Image (cartoon, rainbow, N blue to C red; front, side, top):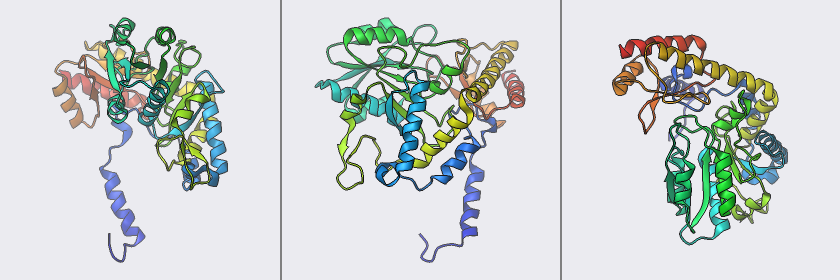
Length: 374
């Protein structure tokens, strides 16, 4: 740190140079976050000093959080759901399984989840001291419920289903997982961090949320397809009793108890989520999802025209293409400015068609992909 400090214009000159090194979203096909909606950005800045870690100081912001939770709950099939706005899917997943662990009181707890689950669950295993058991996937890259059944024992405390898997965009058979969870008296957590703002707006009805009886908790991220600012995740529980195992005393704050994982929490992110959801409404999100799905179908159709097939037909705006010589092709695409990623097993090119992508750039990408393959 400088002793006298720098003039403001010099500070922002440094920041501008740093920002120029960051990648523009224009050619980013591997990210599940996107440019936030301008309304979200404006609301974020309006509430930039609000700290929900001590919500007694910010009662208006706390009321907004309650409204956001209610809106998310309604979107997830239960307007009376409870919870809070977290930093994102990782925190929400940690807290959901922390609740399950604290409710079940097993000496050696384990959780059964799909091989396709997000890597945050590996962090959870380390943080919470929970054994993670990974069930196999079926031919459509959804969890095999027979494999799930085989992994359950007396120490199992919870099952996890994915609604919009990170690699394939697939939705596990939540109805079947619910039946298994209810029959074994298990907690069922649904990670819909990505799919939560996609599935409700698809033409096809998919059961994945609190409308399924056995679902106990849900992760849903406004800062992904919800177009809110970072960080804005969501953790929802069907019953308020699930918040109780997370509470700790906060004797020197304006509130008596706190149940979030982080202490300081951004009120700005809450305001941003409320603003964009209220501004867009269901019709606005449906238009956005429909556009993303049109681009997704165009990618699949265009790739098929030069012999590249998807591993499975996409359920949402995530595509896994069976690209030959994938490492070489991705390197060539990177040289042209395209950011792509890969799935783990089987290895394929993973593309995510987010709202920042344009129809024009899709055609450019398809042309570049064809050239890189040939």
